[in-house]
Length: 299
Image (tube, rainbow, N blue to C red; front, side, top):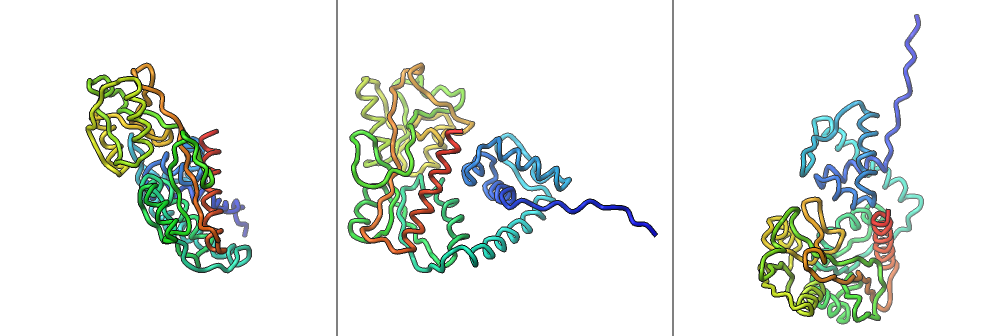
């Protein structure tokens, strides 16, 4: 009796599975690309190859989001288990036995967009370390660190005047964001959506508008980036946002629309005077995450 020759079953790539899980959890290719520090086109290519490898469609796509197919839901359970076992195996050999609690502070915008992926990756590598996160404005975080109520803090800093404390882990341009094909920027006075007192994005935007004598009114006031984005997407106002925050449903506005140029801002890492090994591990993980993000934006 002869048996047909079967090809070996292909092996699943852990990096591709991480991307797949990130898309499944965020429901968006662009957001997932930020989480895994890849470009959206690279993420799309990974999923295309994975679907070809499995011979199944994993996502249903529309203009704004993606959802899992039945095959995708089945793979998600396997992918999470595979990644968990892989991380556990590797950590037994190459990761030091560290444990303890590290108190980390961050502004709301960083806490919403960047910390989840950073902390998820860190927890996979250092399961014995618990990161206790505090969300506050940058001024409040500075005070908490000085009072030794935090071990590490990520803060937003204006590049003018140049601060001297902390370590720059990321620098980004601040831009005016409006709705795609929107008209809010044509209204007079200009409707703007900004944060509360003490926000460096607010102070930069208002000072530049006043310098060019552009009349404006504060249409929305909130300390939450989700509310800022909602006001912009609805074309009810424009807002000063980091360049990477401008999504596909937004447009960057500038001199052509009669708006002043905005400067850059830094994300700085402040640390306690004496760092324990767990604190150092968290700090190193933050540095690595932002360095990867910078590579993606430069690509």
